[in-house]
Image (cartoon, rainbow, N blue to C red; front, top):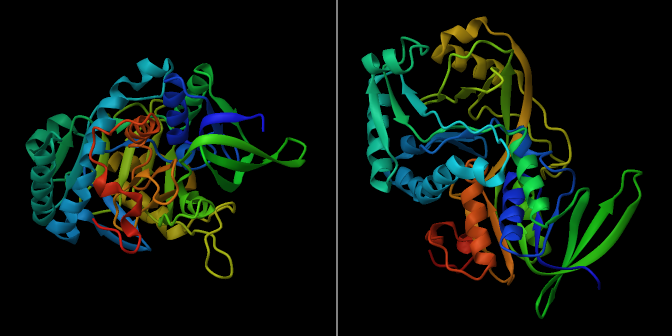
Length: 408
């Protein structure tokens, strides 16, 4: 067997590219394999939000907001805050380290409220976030008149986090992928991981490759370690290694408008509605926030991630209505395109990050805000690959926490 690597990274989204780059930069022999093309799936289809405040979540079509689900649920969700703080700091320097633009702008994020109950929720949330070290303050209407005059008069208060912002999802992963290649990593597109066999020193992994003519061939490479950075395919890939990695896939709606003069400097989210919006550097406005799309499934209800998922008209309309309610000027801005993006969460809303139980040398990261947290995930994984001890406590994110008999 001629091909040997220190690590095979599975998944060519932002997380996979970051992990390949960091590991190669540290001197590892790295193969990055993606079943399709770099940035073809979730990383390239999301809205590029860098959000570090507690946010809207939706699991198995049952929606709730973390802090609305009760104080204890909010405290559990906040256990991801060390990853958020680490990622915020990393995004601030990532373009300099990569050597290319990633479209990063951390100009602040607002989570807005329209009534007293929502304001009370924001105040509780801010206190909780500050206890973890996130600098958040609550602005009243008079302050918002100065900070964010574009907001509706129905908005009475907002939480402001100066760390929040955006990156350009279209260019971020490809730029990091190029940095990985420059550092010595090999990137193989159209290479699907289909098998794995344990060896004394690691794994023999089998890749099914499809060339540009459609010809298929199978090859096996030997590696000391494997990183699963494949988003919605995590559960499927875990089974290749005999591991149960439970995830819940979500299909979500996003819309982009035509270009308009810049007037929204912030990432805007809502304390009581499914809404996330920001104005990109190209002056379009990206609108999302958790409105569901239709995830395609087979006759047995199993998600089919290789199929094209479907938009739901009422989600497009509801998302647009929420955006106009928060930012009235958007009523006069034409929508250009709506599309479906996918993401995955763990059943308890916290990420899966770390070593995979019963599969020595296999590591995983996924769940929740994987684009936002990608730099932090990658840094932690790269440290584990090098045999180090993480400087962030990974216990709450242990991939084995759902395994029968595991202890918290």
